Amino acid sequence: MVLKQGKTIRTDYENFIAKCPHCRHRNIFNRRTDLLTCAPISHQNVNCEKCGRSFFIGGDLAPTAWRYLIFDCYDLFKQKKYMACILNLCQACEMFFLYAIEYILIHKPEHDELFENLEQCNKFMEKLHKKIKGCTFVPLRNIVVDMCSNEKKFPSVKEIEDYINAINVTDCSTPDISGIQPEEKRQYLKVLLDLKIYKTRNNVVHKYGYRPHRDEVFPFLNGENSVKVILLDVEKIMSIDDMIVPSPL
Image (tube, rainbow, N blue to C red):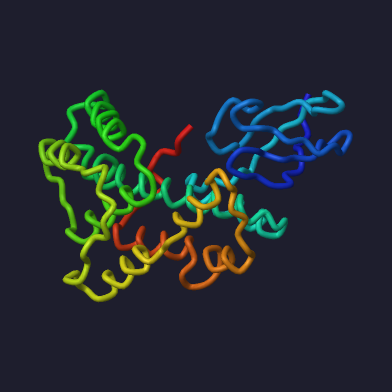
């Protein structure tokens, strides 16, 4: 029997929402719990939560995790869930920083020839993750800025290992970018360093639960210095192909 396709209502970082073609029920399929995968859904058979009949879903978006979190913010903003917006946007930044660090150290296509095999590559990933475990916005941002400002190149496994060992996870100082050229790159990094969304996030998650005003959140989500624009600019100057950076579970 040929299954009918459910109508995709929306997809986000956690869920795939689709309408049953039989009873028109609006189903919310959680990626981890119901679909058992965090990979983009091109075709997957499911059962309606109401009538129990089978259909298939597909046509999922396939952005990296940090982009998904930003996409989710537009609905959160319309619903006036400004606290959730701040949390999502700051987490998107931290995810992007981790992606950028992983890409430059491990995932660049030319690094395929550096590692003897996949096992060695995975060991370096594990070493990196252990080193930066617990790092939040500022230390991760500083690593990214260091990589950008000094145009870090890693032509050997030893240099990758040396850089990982030298990472200072407690450094919360603002990096000096005054001598960076060209000017365009320096301006991109200055805007990144001026991004203080982590301070608003810290207030939100504080025990008193700060509730931001709409006007505090709007600039982070829209405009020329929004989180999305800033991260895309940094992605450009780092020459990151985020289609080959694996998404987390």
